[in-house]
Image (cartoon, rainbow, N blue to C red; front, side):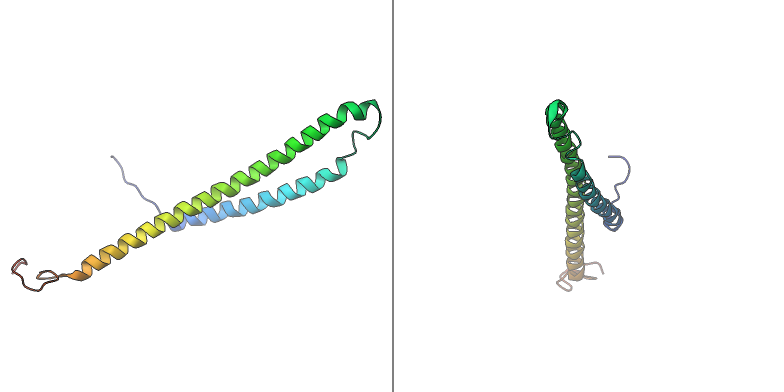
Length: 123
């Protein structure tokens, strides 16, 4: 494998926090959008030919627009949550490995592995 792999969980977490802010904005936009739709419910009318023909299509399009907004919001939130899960996993793995290395290093002495001079160390 060529190249070098580098992962900075703190940097990724900072970027993920920006995504979280976007998710919050998306939530607000969705709520404002749905609230903005409410006054338009009667625009096609409630009686007559046009209302009968346009009403069902308008309701269908209104629901489609709402569903789209909710889907976008849910997608942004899901991506943010998934990324945080990955960041937490990497941090846990890193911390566990560093702890293991520290434990091994603490058992090594100049004369060999935690046993004093057992004839295996250098003199």
